[in-house]
Length: 482
Ligand SMILES: [Zn+2]
Ligand SMILES: [Zn+2]
Image (cartoon, rainbow, N blue to C red; front, side, top):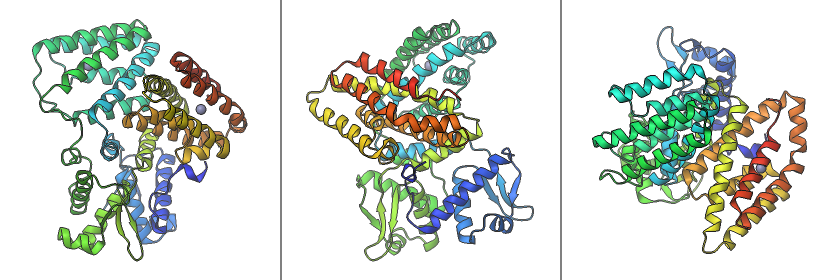
């Protein structure tokens, strides 16, 4: 992978070494078969194994603790204990990113519809006899009013796709959307009936393997739910950082201070590059010790909320939002769940088709389409001049441009994280497979004309043709050997 694909997180040398040591720890945990509860080593053993200084090791440990890969246990029999990365490890950073880009409730709902339409389609193709009983059981419990969770059917359908990536995103976006409204709002009885009927109808379409109908019913159901929630009095379009960050950043003193500073950044609307404070001024302003301020700064840097610049005029500054930390955490979570390149490509294809359809709509209905034409031509030019990989690294490639054209920051997040995971996994698999390496060599000759063809369809306002060409492009570039 070209180094540009992974944006440098923090500029200091120690942070880079710590990042590398953390990656090594994760690789070792995977190599061992992820034995949860086992001690990877004492601090002394780890210092020797990874050949780094104590300061670097401690920072690396902090990183793997953030990622829920392992946790340091003090005392006798202590050491770095391997833990289970759960979905909370992903949700915190996802909430932070969505807060930073100001994602609205409508954007989150639209992403959910996109994801769950895809679930309906894939589950319809995969559902077999063995799945009938479990789905019927859920529907019966809903009818009897004994279902413990209104989202149970949705989770079950996501599981039917057997795609861990799709399961993760459906659950993440469902939990994130809950932060925008009062979950416990009492729903009128009529609504519960509507929901039950919708669930019955969706399940019937899926169990009879009718993908088109399942998609349509899922879309109608989620749109109705979105409409209902949008009209509740406690619902907000934009997240309140104080509410949203309560599970995302912990409560230790450094964490609490990080939350306070982030809340200030979010509320004040400070743009990237804005000065937050020096170490000394933050200590004074927040009545905190140097150690607490430093811990807060590390957390803010880890989530790419703020960045430290050294030297005269240095200090803590608001950073450009970046999804690198979130992508790393998602990659780790998914490795634990046995994700393969096939899973990533399946979601990627579904996303690209939805993205190009939304981009086409936006261009077709625009008052001034000339601006879009310029953006499209700029992306094609960047790829022709620097190659697709480098253009992707600097966010100037054709697919990222289409993601931006959707005008939905949550869809952009899903799309870009999936692309990054695709690159990461492709490089890993391709390295050991000569057929894949050969394929990646021949890709540029195929990709250029395909992107041009999709662009022409978009600019001509022909969304059907654009979607069709995108589908052909995804098929053509998908490796056959996985
Ligand atoms: Zn539902
Ligand atoms: Zn492409």
